[in-house]
Image (cartoon, rainbow over all chains, first blue to last red; front, side, top):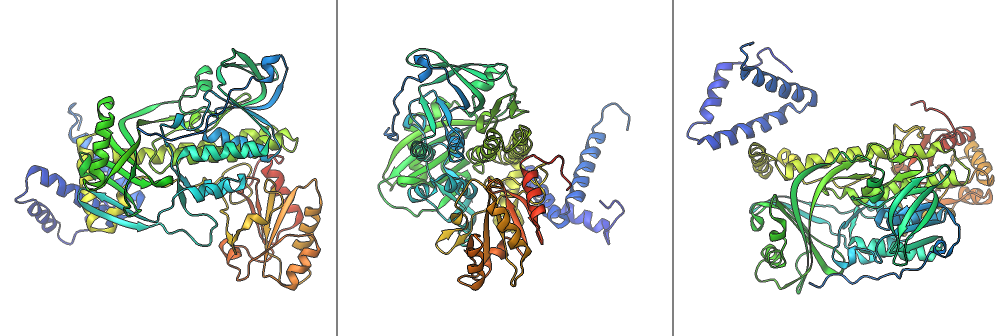
Length: 71
Length: 553
């Protein structure tokens, strides 16, 4: 899994991602993000990399919602 | 509701009930798919068994069609046992399938079978037909004591045998056997009596099988809905079985099953599936649910577990019945080899070694299917929605839809019995016959080989010697162009030849001249030996019989 930036222009990508959700309901935004994850996962393909991305996403999520103030 | 008309078999007093002392070599508890397959396999290997079944008929007294998909490996096995032809004549094969969701077709496929193999990828036929044909075959072979209305109520392992307490219409008695195989289904009495943990996990996903007969023809295709508009956006399977009876299977999820499976509701659901214009008659309604079970050890002393008694999983991919048949295939030759003094008792432990991982895999792969087909939580449902939508648009989306992977045979590549390979060797089509039809003994080890183009051929000499040695009990099949001088030379040496004119069979088996495939009595590959010598072949065979310790892989 790569953790250094690979985007030519990371701000442009972020902007594109936000705009893609414009005019959508909450439910539709979740559907879009789910679809995007699947589309992009298929670009990666490699099992090991995908597993590492999922593990890191879960880890980052649990840390973010940790309530003991440790992080 | 009409149901299915099935034969009943009379209860007969057992000799033990009249005071005879009998020690059976093998007693099989449960005369269902797995138990009857095992009894038939053992009968062909010359082993007499007694089969105890609590009922007096096959097929749940005509109310159920149960497992209806018998895949290619099962057909190969049933061919060796002698019932495949009847199954293929009675059953139904289709090739066009469609996977749908909502009003959309996600994709269609054509499972047209590989013409180089003897049997199609699968056949659809009601389970009771398979059991019926097995009973007929057992009667024909005459080595099996089928005892109906014999219900096992107790089991006790003695010093040198197992004693089964059996209840009958004429009162209780004891059956004594050296070995007991518990093939008594998902709610196994023997397993419960022995207090063996199944590690059961449920899914709370009710389904309702509804078999119908239509008064008119509709295209014979298999349709699978992930979300059927006529079934509250739950799943539905629709495919045809024997006798022009359609199998419909409706996912009902968590519900009051008594209400949902009531005859009028079931009939209405079936009508909605085919549409109002179609005239249909409901033959059978059977609600069911799946759960996962897997015992840790398939062997407990002299008691062995096979089929649903050992393992249970959801039916996506038709793995339950087919893996029970494979259990019987794996156990039969090993028990027979031990009982005939050809192999040590440790060979029977390789049944656990080889079949437990196969069952564990089936649990794992079907759990993934049932997770997809019955999403546990709303967020899973929403992720599935995204997959189904992408499946309409792109091939990778279709690849993610998981309605089940059709059962296929396990490969014993890690097994202590395997020198190399371990995979099941499918029967090939040779002219209008099968490759294995040329064998005189269908129960023996078999060497499939390719002669060298010119003499001298050391492999030919080696095999001629081995084939001659009755102690070796080795069948051989030489793939060669025929008629030819080579085929005649082989015939003169007493070696069986198979006409492989364009070398297609050899190519499909990846056989070079001088190569030898050694097949076990269950037609799994024990070794693929290049430039094979007699010593290598006999060593591989000895290893496959558990006579050689350890394996170098």
